[in-house]
Structures are given as C-alpha cells and as structure tokens.
Image 1 (cartoon, rainbow, N blue to C red):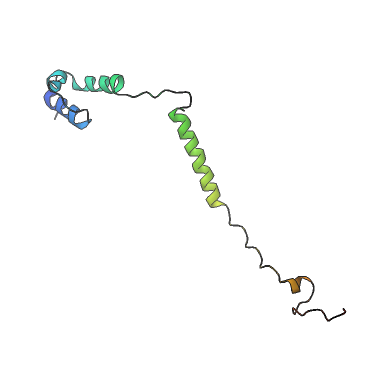
Image 2 (image 1 turned 90 degrees about the horizontal axis):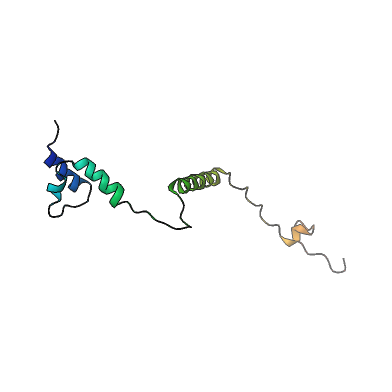
Length: 104
C-alpha cells in the first residue's frame, strides 16, 4: 500500500534527519522524494577541499593495504627463542665451572 504524499513528506523530513521547519511539510508535499534528493546532493553535501586531502578510493586502498600488512605480521611465525647465555667458565672450557690452578 502506497503512502500519501503528506506521509511521504513527513517521513522524508523525519527519517533523514533534516528536521522540519515552519512550512517545510507544505513545501515538499507535492514531490518529497525529489526534493530530498535535491537537498542532499545540492545543499547538504560538504565538499572538503585541500591539496593534502585524498579521495575516498585512495583512503580505502591504503586501509586495505595496511590491513594486509597487519595480517601478514600476525601470520609470520614467531622467532625461535634464543638459547640461554653460557656462563664465563663454560665458555672458557671449564665445564665444571672450576677456576684454573695457580700458575697454570
């Protein structure tokens, strides 16, 4: 069942958060859908400008690449644990940790 144009106008103002001002309901009653498109596209679409700004497509591609790098880092196997350091006595050949006799 189709809505009446008055209901469509009220839904347009309420549902899309544009807010109804005095006379808005009567103004858009004849064609609420086209008026909504016109307001959103022509009046309420902010257009940021600046040389440093990138397009949404560029930002999305950067995000996808970043997510791939993060996933690759997570999938990389952990490095093997380092062996425990040897004591000075073991490293010099005294396996039992004995000191060399005097004069040796």
